[in-house]
Image (cartoon, rainbow, N blue to C red; front, top):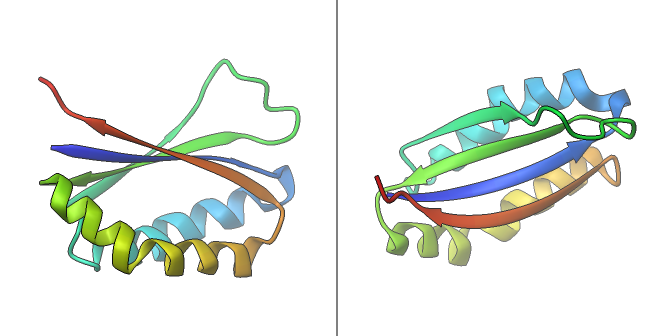
Length: 101
């Protein structure tokens, strides 16, 4: 199992709207690509949230090839949708992990 992790710090001013969007629209769009089976949303604790809270969304893929397919065909479109909607009110970074146990 491959985990595509997207960590995002959002401005306080968009926190509730962003959470609603990520849960009701963005994750659904990404799952509907067929590359991931499900996703989990988490909030980081014990971090500096003076500029806004930090969340992670972990997308689960059954194989690296499915993840690669997402990156090749869908990632740029999904990232652009986020920038079009939220502009500079968030910052995100991504990491890729493999489930060992």
